[in-house]
Length: 157
Image 1 (spheres, rainbow, N blue to C red):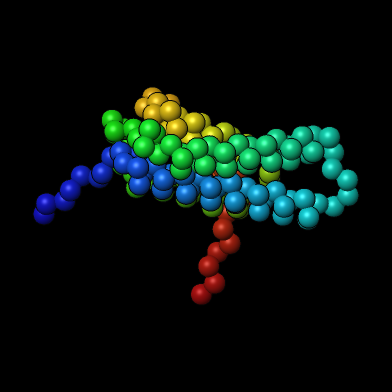
Image 2 (image 1 turned 90 degrees about the vertical axis):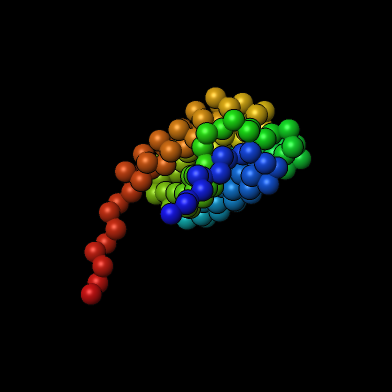
């Protein structure tokens, strides 16, 4: 069997645009999650809760700005030497979108969003070491979020 090795990630304009798509989807998921948190909240928000919501709203806007920058500057953001397959980058960012959507406590989103912002910024500047570090941060926080999720109910026969 002759299987081709996985194609390196962020090696083409289309790859960078695909990352921008995923970052936009992450911002959309974060926005929906924030709106759900706000509309379902009972009683007044504490100062700490307000600070978390404001910070995540700021992060949402920053994530959108970085995604838009990647769209605009995709040719300059290609990272040809990245030894990570494009499919892994897309899978990690898609998993982040799902985790943002499902996370029970809003505060748990912060590390995951920080990793996505680092990924967007590093990809935007073509910073190979930054991209690799950011992918590790997204992977780490996604696993941490998963560890805090309640176990799935048993399947009914």
